[in-house]
Length: 147
Image (tube, rainbow, N blue to C red):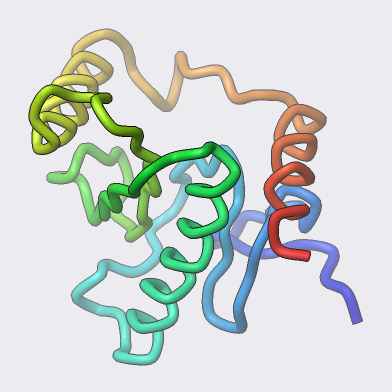
């Protein structure tokens, strides 16, 4: 039986925007925090394991798709991590040789961008989401990596 939608707190996420899932987590495009979910420290061992294994599986496919030479995983968990709403998720960043002079500079770049965004505008009011069609198109492209 195929699923019509996934949930994020009280919100429904169209299944067409999800490109990979396990019984405990899912990978989708353009997730915009909207409601308190769980903090990483509150995940059960099974949920934490599933999250990391899913990130690794998705990462392998994205690394191939983007012809990257490695990956950076950046976990975000709560408002101190630059979020407007506390929850846990992982950014999977495909990397290529020479993208930074020093590999660890990526963390500074992420931190600077988060600060710029916070000072520039209110994310919940001014950030414009992509259309459903754009999100579905991107999810379709990524979903094809897992068939």
